[in-house]
Image (cartoon, rainbow, N blue to C red; front, side, top):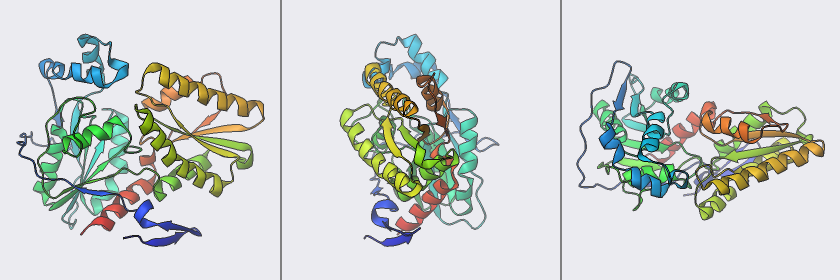
Length: 352
């Protein structure tokens, strides 16, 4: 069903811009793994010994071009540096509905995780909520533990929300593989999740709320829109066809921002951060050329992203653009209050 509504004088279609694709997760015969009890701060940390970690190394090397020449020792250091996969539950609110929301996040095992936890806390006023942190390269136990916990709290139906910019990346593909929604893994083989009454939602992509968030983040660093260009930078997928699809989706965001704010231009850029080094280098070269050219022509360059949170990619992007003049809003989409609103509205819209 398509429902139209008007926002700020513009007409939007809820079927496209608000309502995400809803996929019902089927039941599998794979056994669920037992979980530890929640700690006092509401966490379940999935610790892995070196033997467990080494098992998927070869699959990961084959899956990620940037790691194909890494030794087991180097792989172990990389995996350790990413931290543990873990689940973190918000304290349930008295009178919450019988609906659970499980958010899947990349995770950094650092301050950004704390910020995300706080940013998503408003959801717990309406739903049983928790966040499963981790790229799920070697396990899905932190996800199944989260589902178990939300069900134990009283959630009769659970909506899984993947925090990615789009469906065109390896992270969401790995998560979908865990739920049996994709045939092939994108990193390595992990445990399949057996669950009924669980719905996997599509990411925010170019939804109306994504457009508004990017618009707000651009305006925060703008001083003279007609004399500024905005670069919307994404992490981007490995696959070139997926990258084309992502850029088309991003173009819907940039067109909106340009029209609403009156910028000289708004341009989507995909770094393809995990692709082969030469692919990423080519994208960075294009990015630098755009910044340098507009500086010569007397325009200020503003940079925003559609990344979920601020952190590693933003720091790397600053290094990529060293020596050039630009203004950078490093905020991720989840830091804007409209992101939690998007989740709440989407879940409410698709509930039976």
